[in-house]
Length: 564
Image 1 (cartoon, rainbow, N blue to C red):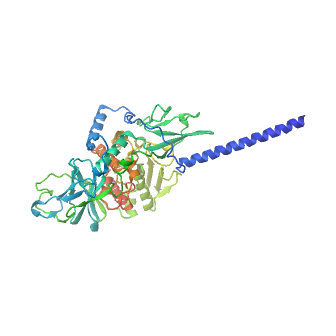
Image 2: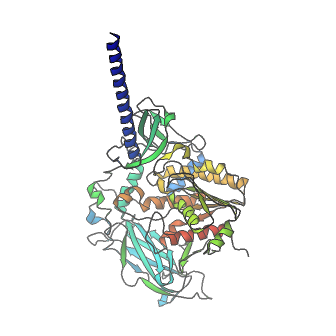
Image 3: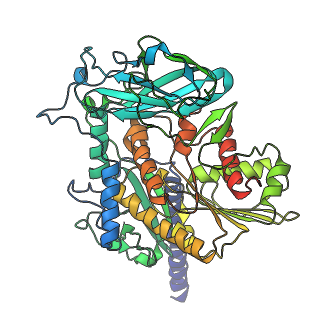
């Protein structure tokens, strides 16, 4: 009997061990599949969060605004208000929308056929027409204008004025001698801007954010965002206790607490955001970032500045006040600032090393400021990258030059951020990081926070910048010698899908907000918008090396100014 019993015990133990083996094997397979999903190898587009109620807004979340902050927000929103197309009972047919092929621009007549000189103001009139060749009767088109001289490596951004009747003025300040040409581009017709505005206000869930929760053998991934529908399932509240910046995830359905969240990542993008008819408003080469042709000449020859003439003259028949004040321009491939800072050219590693000697440089924000870290670590042979085993895109990163006592650091900003999985221990808000700095004359801070906010209402961005601005003011109060550089938004390539999530129109609105909110502070505002618009290279979310080099020159010219 005991032999039979021992036989059954052995069989039972064998079956138990086999079961445990298959259990752990399946758990490993599931975790392996989960990791593939986390790294965007599996398809995540089919699984989207419940759609937000179109009336629901993220704007109310976060700390309560003071009356002064509410008033500032009101004025900021007014300053970027965009003309709406006339209301219609049905969507505007494509044939009645702006068509760059039928549109044109013409040079306004000069006074008495006089010559053009450096310091004059040149003006063109842009006449927008639809696909049937009929003049447009309302404004709201998104246009870009550039004046350039390819042979001289020169270029400057123009100012576009919307007269809200289908005509626009493109105004340029003539800053160098020689032949100059004008380029006018339709980025979006007004009808496309109307679609984008609705997406921004009603669909802040266009990017799918997720977090992985794990405890022991249990794991689950849930949706996250600045705001989530509260009637779907319980929420985990990850609002930052210091800044009040809101962030939420759905609570896991398994026996996992909110404290078991281990990372943050982008899981894809929402699809089917617009109708097929609306998609016709975003056709590359047709009505998306397409050049408008000139009627008549698109170029003039600029002569040296007259000594006895007024500071600035206009191409209008009657003298007009100066209406365009660019932040700078390119000449012979080098950026020349018009903001009072003398631009230095740091063309060799030794010059940069001497400028940064004994300094600590902190870079905070998205990948557009990470480019500066990558440029310096590749250009300076003695600046050695210290391997922190961080994610390739997200960081944090650190580089040191021990002989010259240089320390360079980069850290990404807190959510929303659309990168590969980031450990929650590395999700830091820029304002909190700034509050941890001692500052001083040996400290340089470079900030660029904008690219990941294009899908949210502008109020969300204003709130983030308000917290960063407060921290900058506190830093400058306790350490006035600190050099702070704030980088603005830049232009990028556009396609249908890119337009719906990261259109240049979204970026333009954020660019104007960041310039307004940091105006008047003792900082260097790096105008990346004009530096990418004025340059001849194609627009890219990550500007090409020649533009980055000019941006580095602008930063270092503030760090190590010319001594008169």
